[in-house]
Image (cartoon, rainbow, N blue to C red):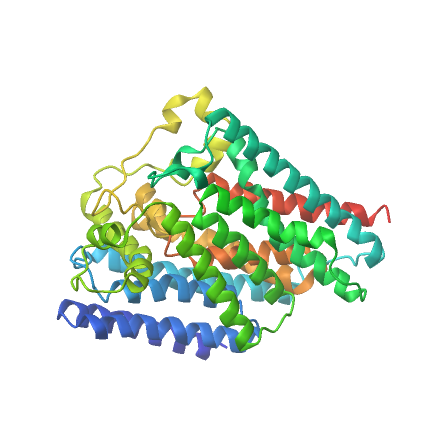
Amino acid sequence: MIMEDIKILIIYTAAYILSFITGRAGLSALSAACLIGIAVFIYLKEKQISKELLNLRGLMALGLLGGEGIARLQLSNLSTDWTLSTWGSFYIFYLIFYFTSKYTEQLLVQKQFMKISPLTGSKKSKLFIFKVIILSVTILSWACFFFEAWKLQFIPLFTVDTPHAYSYFHLKGIHYFTTLAILIPGVTMLYIDQRHKLSLLPDIISGIGLFAPLILCVLLVSRFQFMFAAILAIFVTTVSGKKYKLWQILILGILLILVYVIITIERAHSVEYLNGIFEMKDPHTPIFITQPYMYIANNYDNFNVMTQELSLHSCGLKMLYPVITLTGLKFLFPSLGMAFPLFTNKEELTTVTLLYDAWYDFGIAGVIIFAIILGLVTGIILYVHNKDVNPFSRLIYAELAFYFSFSFFTTWFSNPATWFYLGFSVLFYMAYHISDRFY
């Protein structure tokens, strides 16, 4: 085992050194290939060990390291050479995360740290708690949506020539509950799985739980909310053991892309607008390449800009923003909720990577601390996932799988919405366990 870890360390380090050297030599494609190659290697290695298609360490490699590789292609005029701080932060984060999560999981397995008591209630009686969660959250979210629409006097989908309509469709506190429904397709897939084990077909509750949240996302014209809800549902079924056939994956992919494009059109963003914003070196690059590339590559370049321009670290306030917001501390101490400047290479391109706020807080030390904490939590989640029989543990696992897969996109764990959704997922988990005592 130690020899295997040393081999991974050597291959990983060699890939970074080669990427750095070839990047400095102007060989962008080769620099990119080194990082994409190590990302795929680690993912396949973890998949072989865990037997999980959605293995967390592997997904983090694909999302973060693979994203770095795509960024190194430097297809845009906005791309610049990375600083030593940028290279060092990207290299050290995944290395520490990988070994911390791996050894934490192994230690828990060896010590049998957490004994999971079996659930005693009948499977049929457990369907009730699923119905309560699906219906109550769906009704709550739609009620909050209608309240926001009434108060703000518009619905994003039905606005004309308003590219950022969703950005203005927010009432403080209320909008968290409006978007809470994005968890429900995932919960519904757990519910359908429980019915399948009882030889029961999907019912009307299943239809409501799958389609009502997705329709709500379309009305909000939120690409992220729609993609999160749909992908989380797919992840939950995958974690539950569902084997997708190739034609099913293709249909799912086509449907997701179709809705994504429709929502993009409704947001009033033209092809010319997007290509002009991103300043592609080849102005004839098709939009279906430009747009996904934009949402991956530029995030790393924004991180690089921060390492060059940030003069004063935020000393923990960026990463603690969810605590400050969700507890209401920002109203008691307004200085805690102060806005910190966002460092980007273009005003319109504001997405960043998972590591952005950690570096903003303490520099490379913040990245190391964040890697250790996230590695410890991941190791615990992996252990619980392999031991627990509560179906909602799969929902929590699927959420982490989503965040890790899209670690190139935003900071996630310094976003209050992330903790709001995870918090409710834990409440669902507890509700299922409590219901076991009564049935």
